[in-house]
Image 1: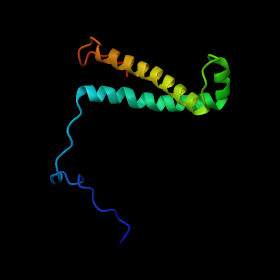
Image 2: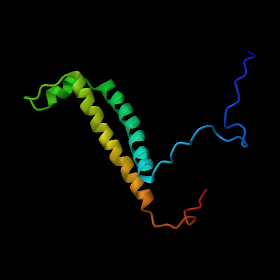
Image 3: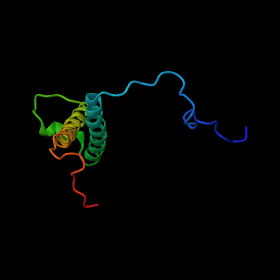
Image 4: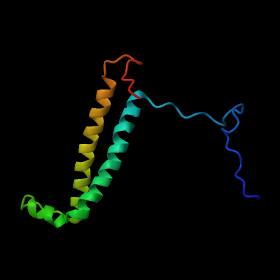
Length: 111
């Protein structure tokens, strides 16, 4: 071995790829992925940042007294709360982009 990597199958434009290509994503699947993945990452970051400054036992003291919860339950519920907030934000962004009434090419050209 001389330390070189073997050529990637798509390096040669004339070569046909081996095996069938994966199916293209539907428009709905693309929208779901565009909302779910960034909102998941934002929720993970927000949860880490939130619990860097807030002790989960403080959440328990501020909640309904009859509800028993563990630290892990508090972490999970807080993560899902942040994920829902971020998903709503992403979904509204996708909705606004998809429902804009500007024809293609008539956008703002202030580059």
